[in-house]
Length: 164
View 1: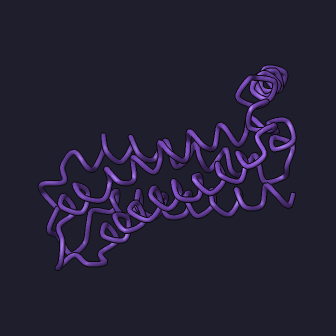
View 2 (view 1 turned 180 degrees about the horizontal axis):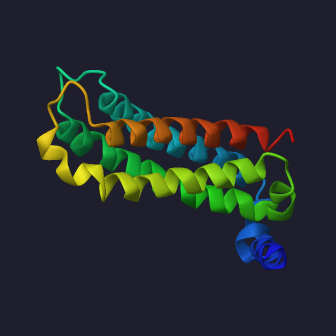
């Protein structure tokens, strides 16, 4: 399994994308800046929605209204973060994968990614029953807490990649 992962990382690093990112004088820092903006668009609205599920602002906005306005922005941020993240990884995939924080970042990314369908195909299917409730069901609150913790961990581990 590790041999397959190593082969994929070397393939990505040796790709035209990897070569382009490495050789472009300002491409890497521009991609980093866009990546950070993507993360902001992803995490800002997601955290706001998660906080709503945890009860913040329950008198101001329903869970469905919050989802309708916040989650599409979060999806755009996700697309930007993934696209730029792959491009950044391609520049030095084997080095990044060898960093101590890499397993943490990728495991937390998987956790955050799995949390989305579990939430949306689980408790959120009955959102009409609790959209205006002061306290969301336990499953919704657990999903929100997992989201907050996982995305915070992804960001911290991502920053640590440069130092581990």
